Image 1 (cartoon, rainbow, N blue to C red):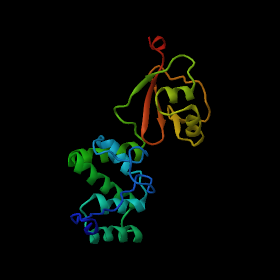
Image 2 (image 1 turned 120 degrees about the vertical axis):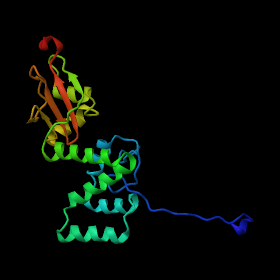
Image 3 (image 1 turned 45 degrees about the vertical axis):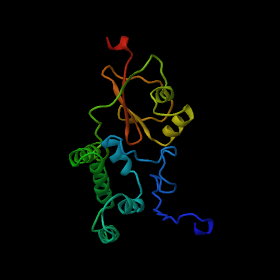
Length: 201
């Protein structure tokens, strides 16, 4: 700066925060970000999806844990005295508490355990009325659970789609019972599929 007769300035550099995939920087446009205004459940679930190695990186960059405390966590996971899942849950709860509240963090953790560890269905999920002769791929795309039919096929092939408790293996017609059925895609997306209004009356 002096060479150009300009006032010297101080440059402050910070470590790069990797996104949920652990390879690229966290970015909303890349779809690997956790938004600070997202609901507690969404924030908690996203943080639980990161790798074990990335967990410690997030502890370093996103919490006030000291390097010594993080080293203790690393050693505990390495020697088996700490379960990686519990270390990650503590991280997710701490971050949710920072942006929401400790009570909401505790509730998000409890709901996560109920849904993903015990296989329960969330109390509140969106509903969708299935028109007559609707196919599964059409349901996935119409309900926004798949961006395209090809993506829906990939989800089915990966075993990520279940309907009324049964894994979906093919693009079959959707036939929910009178009381409706739960469609689950992956670990965190649920939809209550209802029969056509005429069939419910």
